[in-house]
Length: 286
Length: 333
Image (cartoon, rainbow over all chains, first blue to last red; front, top):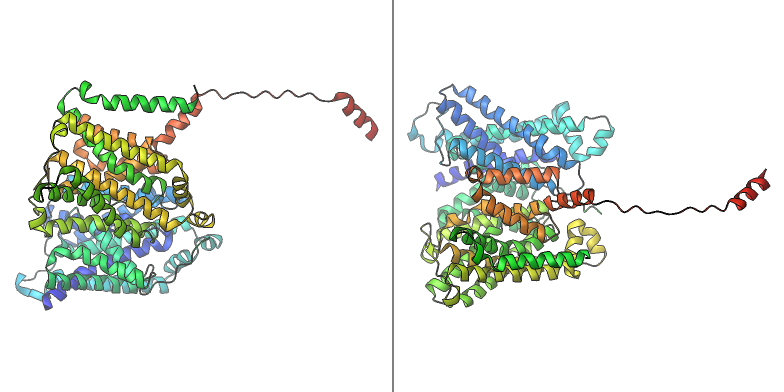
């Protein structure tokens, strides 16, 4: 029972980290990118490749994971977001990010292989550690640290305040002389680095697996929608809640219906409180 | 010849070519491919109303396809129902599934709806794997074929093509009448559609349930064509394929998505390097279309045709009333 809870919290932490990456990109562009779940996937694969494949030290693997994520974030912004945002069609970004997500998933599948591969141990530790195993507490600690770090970044630094200004009103921010295009690029790179970091930390839990992306895109989004779009604390709560629910459901009913239960949670929250637990009410544009 | 007549002539020519295909197809494989295209089109024709006309980005239609296919395989195989009855039953089943899915999710904004449909595709896969004794689990399920006149490849092709033609006719009827106009209005602006009295949720729901029924019938034909189905048959990328066909062909038309299905199904079979790239190629194509011509490839043809066609020069002869002008000028001085 306890082990199910800890494993659930760790899985939830990965969902929460994905939801945080969603939030960073959403704040500056109002786009929910389908590629978000692929950032941790890329981080995990890059880390496993550098450490296990090339035999380099772990900190180089960390750099590679964050760098790959940041590069892919940049690529997403340049290819799939920038040109599409300039058009008036509302949901074109959904198509362009979906296309990019498919491409990166297939490319990784062709290069890395379609089987999940183990991720190397980061800290020397016995496999008999049980609940104190690093594969559980690394993602949990990281997700909390990411949320706290993002909150501090938004409230304490100038760059973070620019992000907040843009998320509140992009046109007003532009009128005040904020380089909105550059801020958006920076936010995508930041989200990519954070996503890659999350994938690196959770690698031992999720394995380096090319098809992880779509699952994370969906579950991270559910965590975000449950917690409230735009709220970092909400993303954390939503992610942990979803992970715990999944773990308890597979503890009691067996592991076959995880996705069904996750979507059930989403539907219940959307019916009762459409803006999520901590989200702000959406004003209908006319 | 008026454009209307030309279009009818083109459609008749296409229909004639499709109807006589078993006689001029080079080998059985081409016939199989044509049957596959027709079975896909049964689903995509219905999905076109949802994606192309109503603008609802349903990226998880493979879930409904797999419900239809498994429904047919279980009803016609295990329960021993007549295949025609089984097709009708699985069409109805998918219609109900579409209603149950659409009722909550069509109220949601775009990305939420897309995620909900994607989740359904994953859920159906999970349930199929979990309900092993009914669906055969990961091993799969044999699917019975159709009885006498339709048991040969040519016969089955005609059956599938007839279903595809029926779906085309139905969607065409919907698209050019009030319902279709309402759907287009919803796609372009929900608020405007509401303001002019389009019942937004009702219209979207009707289109979605219709696409569900199409998915059920298409899934039955698809399963009967494959003759053996496993959960791997209905992978998520198949869903993406349906979606890409419509987007590439152009939203808000029927011919464009149809050409999209034909080309995208046939192209990887004819050009083998593309088959290896597989879904990477679909992603690339989708990205290129979205970035360069969001209106779809069909729009490119229209633009080229407009460029090639000589623009009629209108001559408006000007006949100035010179004496009056002269008088006016003089009196002003």
